[in-house]
Image 1 (cartoon, rainbow, N blue to C red):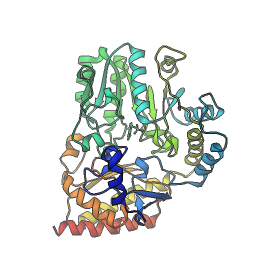
Image 2: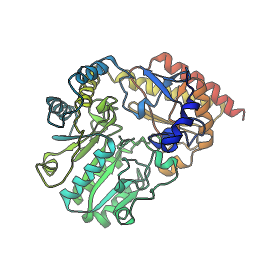
Image 3: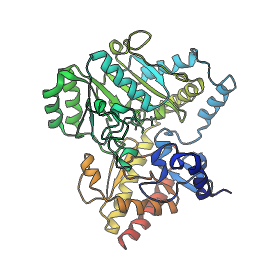
Length: 429
Ligand code: PMP
């Protein structure tokens, strides 16, 4: 057995911070990250011999549970035929057809290798299509780490307290306008002032990168309206929400019409996949059909496509989502009741298969400022004690939690039982 502690010390020698993505380093909560040996269903197994009920799910992708046999077999079958060709395969067409069939508002789609690439390409396309430079995003929304989007971003960027990272040129950052999530008035004012210069508006339809924050219905409607009035492209970043609210994305769930949609995470079933797509008249501006350049050596990788196709098969089966929705709601109600019984100020947000818990006595958490007002120190204690009880939560209070089809009622009960003990411990000081 090699301990996580020993592996982390070794990792730090040649990997900055010992990790290949910052939030994995437990910087926000302190301590040593858990090193994973394997995962199965709802569980992670670390190298120290512990088993955890996993509510991170590789930061979202594993909605069908870890190591699903159908996805694994599809990957193995495809691997036997070769790993990458750099030439077209039928698998790419099959997955594109599948996406355009099940996702609303997508006539054409281009595959990439990550969510970052998807959103970066989508805003380039929007800028090329409109011949405008400015983009609008919301504080606390994270859309990957491309320069234009790493301004007041969420997720790991919040953890480090660098809302805009050094290395992002000021001359680029000045084209990014950042507004307050759920502030319909501020949105309308911005478009009244700058509308004719705005290439696109990009948003997480449900935010999962400043913990889980839900959209007000009038905010969703207003975003579509201001884009219609100004000619800006409306980009729904569904990298996280895509296939988490049912097969039709958050836009199917809320009835929103996007011009471009970005996807990732679940789409690849655990393999590195992203995609952006949307209305034909816009997508036809992408090379080689049009002048907006975008490319990728490994884009449409056959193994990743095979994993994506198997995943799409699983999630489109009738009845796939309802038990996951029900368990998400049950977990949140159980956590709130446990906190109440201990007298710990705590509330939750949840939608579809996403959820978030907040250490606050505020009745609602609706935007970045509300999230920042929560007690992160208490979250850190909660996180570590839950880990000791075999529950793996995201190691920062700015991240949403995720439920999978593999979580059982027993897993939820065990999680609530553990939380009950931990809340009472927190109340005792
Ligand atoms: N957009 C959203 C909404 C995301 O949640 C993320 C990642 N958490 C990204 C984009 C970036 O995706 P990736 O990490 O695959 O580059």
